[in-house]
Image (cartoon, rainbow, N blue to C red):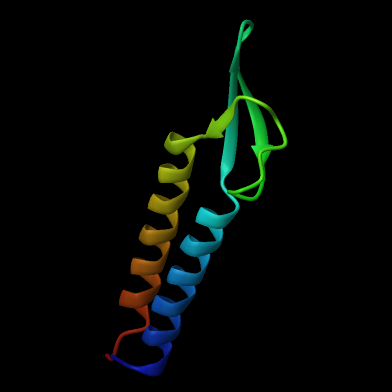
Length: 77
């Protein structure tokens, strides 16, 4: 593994951790499901809001796929 590949791995870990600390929230009320936006994980500005795990998992999937592609492309020839 070269320096560029190590940088990609560190960048993926940092981005995934940042997404975990600042996740998307969703609010389920009487009118249905409404996106509540993004907020810090320990801050509940909207009462009854919860982390939108589906969206968070999709975001992580995209980061892992892009990071994996970058890692492969930056490998030694």
